[in-house]
Length: 371
Image (cartoon, rainbow, N blue to C red; front, top):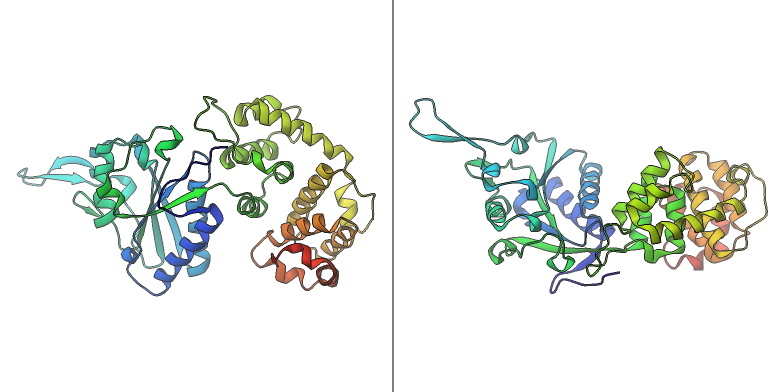
């Protein structure tokens, strides 16, 4: 895993970036302050680390906090020429002057009940002539003769030059107009998002056991495929939508995360055959508990996924917590942390369950302050 950091800027997880930026923007919107109170933000990070996902999550958080609809306009600057940002030239009515037709991507709803996010993705991969055209957008919030609406937030993202992807050094004049944040891979942050988003339980279980496989990007390697949060999401989509049997779709998975990681994932997934029937646990039965560490990680992931699908059936959730009392306390803590990530404030609902309160009173110290 490549640990190259950008100098002199904060490096934080996707979850932390979502938290601080969504809170800042929500405060601006709720207090009817000009959006430009916050400078345009530049998210740096390795390919697949979750920059685009962060912007989508920020949009959801702003919606939840403000009650306003948030519309994201995703502009891949790598695919643009400078003229594309300004629009197509044409003549005015008396054919004496040139006017510029506004590009469709900048046709935004300026209504008071709307918040727009203009996401300038892959800005560091764009030629410097296109980056120069982004000067006006990031500072003056204009594109040629066209002005962004007052309800538009501007966020940019790109890879670092050290990642050895297509990346041009950002001109200092542009860099000085932005708030810079580096996004780093972080398993705990990713897992919270993964549980809430319905990522396949096999993926969550494997990465709980082998956290180093979450982010396998290495700028010194010539590999075309490698594990990242983005590629694991693709693997999850394949498992959820096409076939849950890893043996059947092994080649598809290997084509996404690479042969090495896929082989480890396939070998580990065989522990699922050792697991008790998850539905039995939630129905109040007490099947035998697996003893292997990897099987226990798989069990907590499978139980969390089942609980997410049956989150409103509190009596069955209670049955699962009674079963969890049989687990080694540290694995019980892993399960309880997973349950608390099912949805926002779900831990308040858990507190209404006597079994949860009992578990917390006897083994809550293993939560390491998570509760």
